[in-house]
Image 1: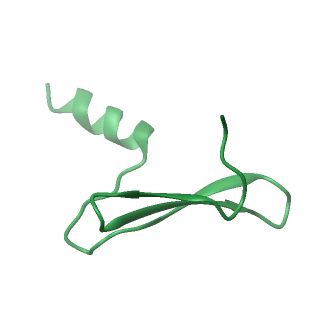
Image 2: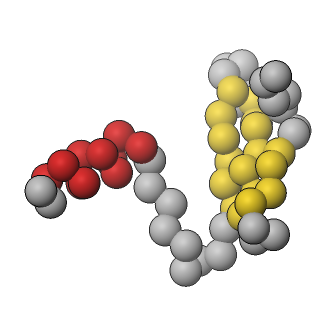
Length: 53
């Protein structure tokens, strides 16, 4: 089952991932987390991970 705008999940009581709708109607993820937690987009993570090999 998918999530709808305004719905969210909470990870380990300190990270909130919320579904939001942009002005153009696209769905996006908004992430709230403590500053000491690194958040990296998947394609950047994969590029960074493959370049360190």
